Length: 346
Ligand SMILES: [Zn+2]
Image (cartoon, rainbow, N blue to C red; front, side, top):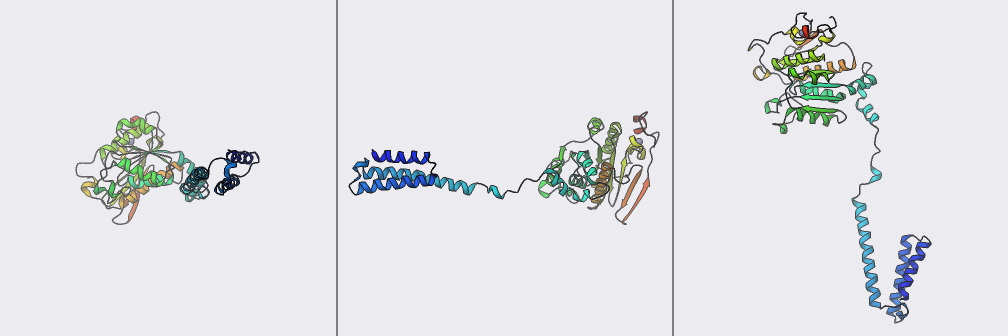
């Protein structure tokens, strides 16, 4: 048994003197080799056991040590190289980089970018106009965007609704567009609303700073206008047909007209057919929707002069644009009575 106690003694001494693990193992292996050799040369009786017993015991310990060393090697290979991870960049630096071209603009700068970040915008319609509106507002860093649309992506949309991809046919537009916006800018919050906005949504609209309407049905646009007037929230409206489009800001609470001031009744059947019947050239919603996004950024940051009391008309077929003045009608059935007592005079 002396051999056993010799190994125990070496181990205890190693621990007491703080011997490195590698040296301790070397000392134990040496002692084991001496005992084994002594047995083989017929002088091992003093250590106890037999040559075969010490060989088996040493082999087992060796196997365990080799197994543990193998595991450590495998783990080291599988573990991600910690030292190569880039240091986490503070959020503020990421924003400085992402919005660098806004920050150098005198009319936007840091304060304007903060206003965009704090803004809460409702986009109605994820169609031809909604596509650039959603992409540009997301890219610009508008902090919270709600996107309402009750339609699904179809093949005939893809000619102009550039926010969607061919493999998204059949998906709800609100969700598919929200995914694209989040992929473009994960720093903003996008809420898809897969339903139509009606006149009863004034409470929802009141929770937003601005509404952008790119729908193409007069009934929906009229309902959105009524809800915006009731909630006293400004509305940027764009519309397109064939080669021509228009953009304006309806804001009767601050002196501008509402949609009903300009278009008190629905157009006669056939006079303003939707794009599905009349057709629309692919890039036109890109032009008009981008103008809507531009007006939204101006409105939210306070830059330049908005389109309150003005309507921009763009004629793509002749490459012309013109501006017409618009005015609030005192006898407007929508904003005339809704704002009584609380309206600012035009
Ligand atoms: Zn009105």
